[in-house]
Image (cartoon, rainbow over all chains, first blue to last red; front, side):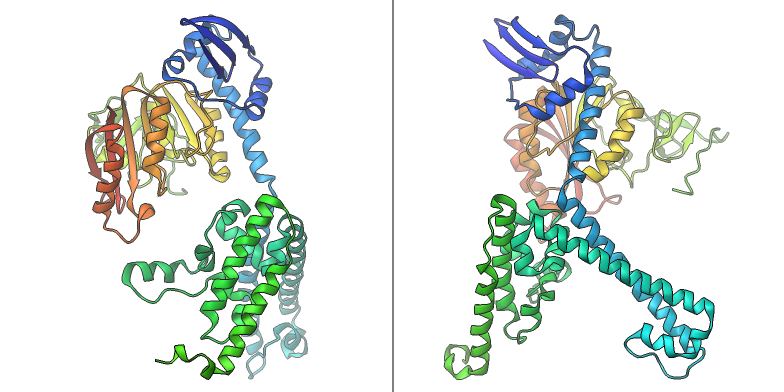
Length: 301
Length: 221
């Protein structure tokens, strides 16, 4: 006796004969719905080879041709539902937003370079740091075209701010621990690089540490150069702000805590704010050690 | 794709020949299948050109290897992506179950299967097959997924869905299994894993079309 659950219904086989069955007939929506909702167990190859035959016997379809066309219609429907569901995930939105920010940054840089070239037409000194402010007082600001151009740049800057705000909001709700520890933007970037919160939560800390340093990592693996100490987590103030001798150590600690934070966020949703202070404590220890090197004699050969 | 303008007529001097594999043709030396254009490829007289640089199966066929494809076959295709190869394969065999996980490319695959009547799209992770209630027994398992655990995934899917003595065509991308190892060492190791379940017929490298890729043709033991 075998009980099999197929896409067109539940069937009980008794000595190769259909003993009982409950099938859905040609109702594409109901069939697709059922595939999304119910649990299905694997069944053996012999039954699998008879799927078409069983469906015809139970008058779900009248021919093999019809079997294929009904199955195809159901699976197209179900595939569409799955795609919509995948894109409705908050991490899909976060990835979109962070990629948007990166695109805008690139555009702002490109346009700013152009604007500063433009200003050079009328002034002999090169443009200082804050381009837009300097532009306003430069002679080029008289030209309406140049003004319009500068306006586009400042509008892009505003849009960037809006995107950043949206990311902060999304991150606060989907990944509170990661946001507290790494900051919303860096956290979002890590999620984007990993391909989602789940892949990030499943990643070992050692890999999180070098996300974004793949060139250096593979150069290391292939040619035996020095391994990278940090990838995108270099943007974290605790990594960037520490002495170069300590960056590898603090990056390692931070990556380990980020791994924990991502797992908390994905699997339990519990908030555990101590993670950041733990990294800060380690940062403090390393700072002190750096200032009093004699206390750590083991470092000196 | 701007330069892939479809052309209708076969130029007079073009020779159409049969490839060893039924359903596959050679227009001069270019691979083609019969059907209407689906992704912007060039067509001649109802023949769709099949670029070996865009499809590993085309690369394998261009290298004249004997590939176990036949018109009546049902194929389970793991790693369908946007469906370029699937669309040609559907011209050759009777039915293709196309599995793809990434929603971005799967959108193209679904659009394709709405136009072609013998493609069934499955949005699932081949590593954790949940298409058990859907897929019938298949004659050929085709796998083109760049995954470190791809051999295990092939074995798992073959155990569930492949007919006794059915064929498997498995594309190994050495670089996604181990970047540091020499490709041939990787192939050997993967083939060894496949030998647990399959009789290996041959292993064919896909150079010069693809670097560090090989195709394994095997048969369920």
